[in-house]
Length: 417
Image 1 (tube, rainbow, N blue to C red):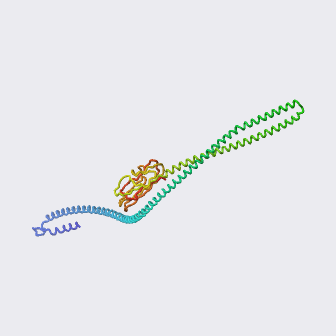
Image 2 (cartoon, rainbow, N blue to C red):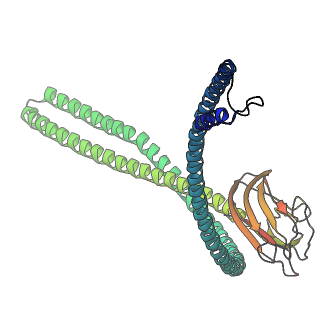
């Protein structure tokens, strides 16, 4: 377009040239040629300038095209980012909607929890009532058991006296039986020896008489033979009688010895039974002494600012075994065993408080009296294995205050299983 304008301008210039000397008509040819050369140079310069302008325009066009491409790429990138942003916005909207839904659910659950807390409070009130009843029943049971144990000890002492008398009788009988057995063991050989001595003397006398009669008279030979045969038969029968008597005596002695051994076994069994009975009685006495360990203590006043460490319960309801110290607030185990501890705390007004049941400085369980409502109650129970001299107390974890009355509401209890 620019080239056409330049050409048109050049065509117009020669037609409009005029001379002051020739009145607008060309009078000199040389001057005209010079003007033509000048115009040609001007034209060439204009063409050069136009070429330079065209080159610069091409460069500018290329740079503009490059800028357009870059703009398109940036536009596509921006569109992608915009799409991603729109997707993120939609996902955020969905998440916000989900959060609103969850918030609504949480509000509903909070309402349910408040209702459950109210129900739990009523249940805890029932549990406290039941615990009081259980404590009363346990006291009655302990009194009943103590009465039974006293009666059992009285009956046991009577039975033990009777058993001791029977053992004395059995001991005397056993001594007599041993003495009789020893006498029998000593008398049997003497009896056999005396009998044999008598029969030997009798046989010797008979043989002497027979010899004398044989020497004095032959008439007695036949009688002697007869007497000898009779003597042999008598001797065999006598030996049989002696053998039978000895066997009977030995059998009787064996029976007496077996009876004595049985009596000794019975006596040993009786002594073992008495020893087992004595051990059971000692165990029963230990159990009876252990069952008397138990306490229930409380606080009869309120405090809206208490934030100490150990919660001391100065009001003592029950303290069997004197394990709880109302001055220090600590329970000292009087004996080894398994103990049950129960604590109840009521927060003052809209305050909150968390308490721990502590064994020798180590927290075991925790109560929670939250401030979602006024006068919230926190309870918990722990079953702990204690050794003699261990300490158990109630300490504050966080929060402050407690509420009670002249009949204790905030309490601490424990007993030995």
